[in-house]
Length: 158
Image 1 (spheres, rainbow, N blue to C red):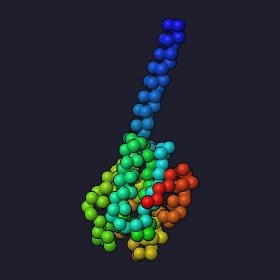
Image 2 (image 1 turned 90 degrees about the vertical axis):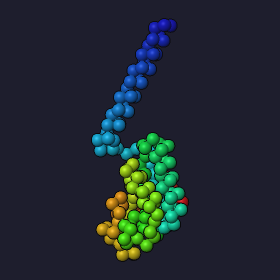
Image 3 (image 1 turned 180 degrees about the horizontal axis):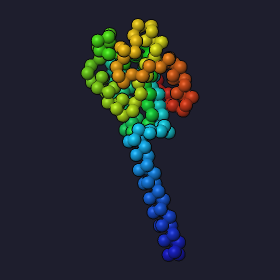
Image 4 (image 1 turned 90 degrees about the horizontal axis):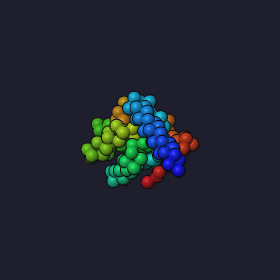
């Protein structure tokens, strides 16, 4: 019986050491820029220019990051009136408060991707130079939502 207990303890400790080693490798991969997709994937639809609406989505994205200990791939698809979130201040018709701009910058630093719909950009005569540095142009916000869902992203509309 004592031998079985020792074997179980060694097996547990060996498994624990292997798990810690795997976590260390995963941490190094993320730190080294070789970030692999996570199992926690979400895409938000952001299609309104209202500041309170935008803050709700940004807050939700932050809570997802916090809940999954920053182990989440998050995309915020901005199209229609939501595109203004990604337009530089000098061209922006919305003039968002500084806090919203800072939240976008902060979330981007944590790997949140902000996609800008090129179809909306054409409609309102905005080009890539008019976008903030955190914005990533995509062909179409709607097409991007479909593609990301096909890749396993959970879809959240507000």
